[in-house]
Amino acid sequence: MSGRHAYNVALVALFSSVILVEKILAPAPYDKFFSILIESFLLCIGFIVLGFMGPISIGFISGILLAFVRGGLAPFTILLAAIYGLLISFFSKLLKVRVNSTVREVRLAASAGIASAITGTLGTLIVLMLGVALIPSIIIASLFIVGLAQGIVGGYLAAALWNRFLRKIGLRFR
Image 1 (cartoon, one colour):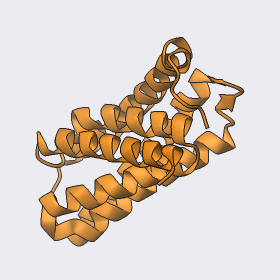
Image 2 (cartoon, rainbow, N blue to C red):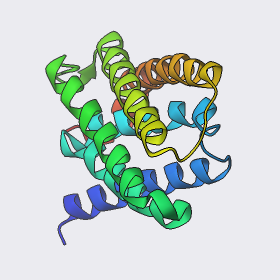
Image 3 (tube, rainbow, N blue to C red):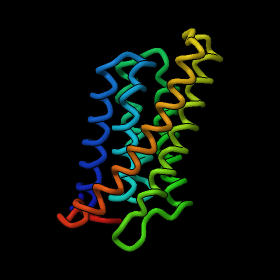
Image 4 (cartoon, one colour):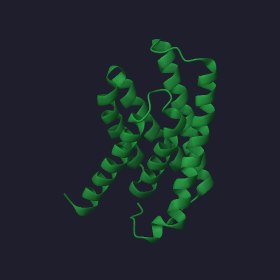
């Protein structure tokens, strides 16, 4: 295994494990009130450091890890986690968030916010259509607003942290 490949695998494993741990700490759907910030932050850092496949890999692996914990809805857990990573990659590429060695903060925040809103809406629709849980309308509205805000903040923090510190300490930019 080459040094770069080992570095990528280690980073995906680390970020996926952090996402798993923070999602275990609170039951669904209430974990969404604080975990989206961490997840969007890590997926955005994954995009910056690992490139287009970074968030997709992190999302997919964290989805698999979380599926072992959450059991019954494992296929949807994996699917939504991978979709979230895919959407962050897609919108980050579409909005051209990376320029040379810097990252456009507002654009990364927008891409993470859009990805969070789409994934949150899709996840809520799946839960409601399957009849797995009865979620009050106020909770659904709160989850959407909080998820959108956390996605935006997570993306902005990732870009700001990259531009101010991480790119200067030698993390590889892909």
